[in-house]
Length: 191
Image (cartoon, rainbow, N blue to C red; front, side, top):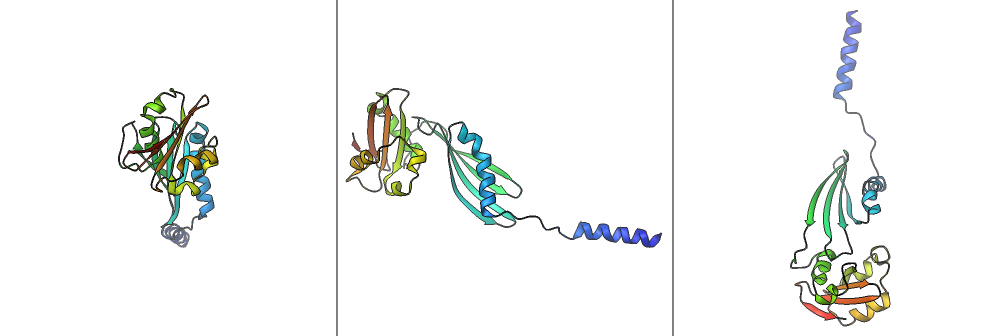
């Protein structure tokens, strides 16, 4: 009987002290879990960008940006720092009100700034807008972010602008407004 108790105690000690290997996630699996978590926000109209997915000790770290009302004159942006395993995220509000900021770092800030101009205000409350940092336009996912944008019109308006410009396009019921801003909210061009 004592031998049986000793064997049971030894088995329990081994079970408690020896780490049990857990299934590891691939980068694709980690990305899919994060995108699945963000799906309800996308379905509600938010624009989601997964900025990075990097392996860390025992899991994955990821960074995502979520823009709510992404084509309005007052979008808000939340940054989410994800960790996997265990799964969780820490939200941080990066743009939460409609105040003008300098320098302009995010497209949503360019929309807020250009949305305050009289030409854009004249389009009415239902106007929808898109903003692009000119030097990153070629890499931008235009079809997903702003499918109604005419590439030829964009190219015509942005011709000759400095590469460090924000190009904003607004429309409502067939009326359009184009605005180019520098990083310090100065108007470079309107059309």
